[in-house]
Image (cartoon, rainbow, N blue to C red; front, side, top):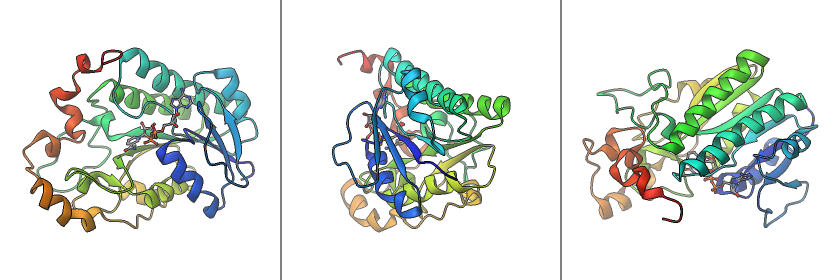
Length: 274
Ligand SMILES: NC(=O)c1ccc[n+]([C@@H]2O[C@H](COP(=O)([O-])OP(=O)(O)OC[C@H]3O[C@@H](n4cnc5c(N)ncnc54)[C@H](O)[C@@H]3O)[C@@H](O)[C@H]2O)c1
């Protein structure tokens, strides 16, 4: 495959990890963000653009071998803000890929696309057992992202891999994240697998590390070639000492989307300027 990977959201947290890890796995990176990337690295290309500017992102996608779309608002916000950046932005990136002849797109979906899905009584939750069931406007935008990806696969024969990312942080900071953590290194492994998997068609996979307390199934992600190396359990003693053992009947632990399913995330708490 020739041409760089177009990485949107390159200035963000996961984008910064990917800029570090993807070149080590053989990928040249063209960075795109609405803000300039602070620490430009050798070999990178850079574009400052808004992902909702279709003409600009078509230009930025020309000559790329694949698109990794991470840009957007990364938590709950108002409907106008979410629908513009996260729904319009995803449409523009898929459409840019189609127009530029780029066949492979990796999308940063989220567990919040299916946040109201309950924890299974036993065993691991597969993606097939967790259809869209969003917990917020943010989750609606991620469910729409998956639907748009499905459309571009069925209509145009593209390959679109949707990563339902759990909690991507340097390290877990809550007891929920003992289950949902996706480490920086595993973020790179997952995106690399999504880029390399032969003909995945439309694929939706959980994005979590191999956490001992994980309850999201990794069979589908592993089938892409994902080989997680990290386990949040190394942080368990310290977190449990501070926060106590998780109460598995609490919505924070009993639903995929955790605290996003609680009243704290009701829309009125996210009015503009709130
Ligand atoms: N971090 C997590 O735990 C997590 C979990 C699930 C899903 N995700 C998703 O992964 C992606 C990356 O998350 P992150 O934690 O790195 O977020 P982040 O906020 O650190 O980075 C997002 C980047 O997108 C850029 N951006 C925002 N709107 C843009 C626009 N209109 N045009 C161009 N660039 C724009 C921002 O400038 C920022 O650099 C997001 O789509 C997020 O929803 C993250």
